[in-house]
Length: 427
Image 1 (cartoon, one colour):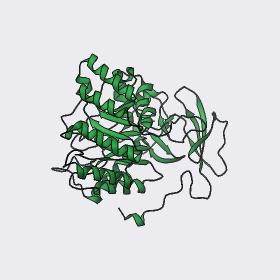
Image 2: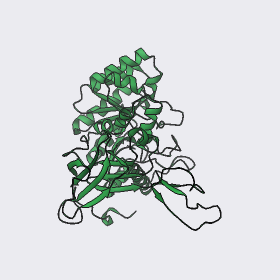
Image 3: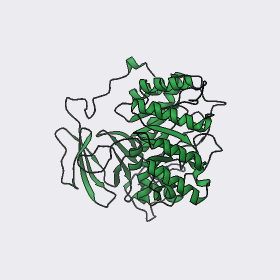
Image 4: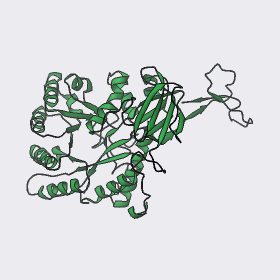
């Protein structure tokens, strides 16, 4: 990847190659409530929503036909590890040098953008012998991705307490000063977990940024103390993946959840797998947390690293797992990767209504349940323009006589073992 000075300059927010804001008409899109509409985007906002066929593109605007697609607010990724992504196939610890970290972070962000996540919070280790080097590389990746999606780095120190933690505290302050958008931490790896949290909260309060801490959540006394400290902070506090909370007796977990809710602490669960090591499995008790009033978002966690060598980084898979195994309704499950994830990240709400941000995902399908079941073809809109497309076509051999739904038909010369005049089904 070329140096920053050679990176192409991104357009201003909401602007295209010309002098004015871009305009895009999304026509004949189906909404989750069953309506079929046209949606006109101008700049980075939704300008108008009308019945199908009622809107025209603005002057010099483009049109995208979304017939057969369900249009949704774009999901966000609230918990990723872009600095270690794609390192599972390498023997031993993944390379952590600058160029490699930047490449992995960029590749991970683009993969998840293709899945639909237009914003991604990436936890980056800052004191494992590399100082701020990995964070600097993720910040460079963030700048190169501007206009395509939002990469939001979180600085994650290892030690923050005692004499050994003095360097960590200084490094954390420096990390936020250089552009980390949130303070992270791993309290359970510090000899003084409560002191670790207190130090992280102090740095966050100094800089006015949120806090996002790793914890298994299997100690109710520790969670109560964390909630008490977090309640005193004037900015947002998020914890995750909290899989250990599911291993507590329900009444104990319920009391812990009530304390978290009272303190305004959000929880990010990881339905697709853990993010610390391959032995950390399980999912936070989402329904129990929600019933207590805790804001619960769902993230992807590890992306093909040692913790999950087959991680997909797909928010729709996280929602699918919450619906199929977590007992949530499809709307609730999608909300965990959509509205709730955006709220945890401090991003503005998105609705398919005039005036809201043009952060959208179109998926081929008619209903949300079907989209979560099988979501291959996707169109991603960030800041009012299409930034990613994924198209899937399934072909069947010797199936012309079958009574299958046909969206298109291709005829090609018959060949040995090849499809012959069969229907093409787009997914």
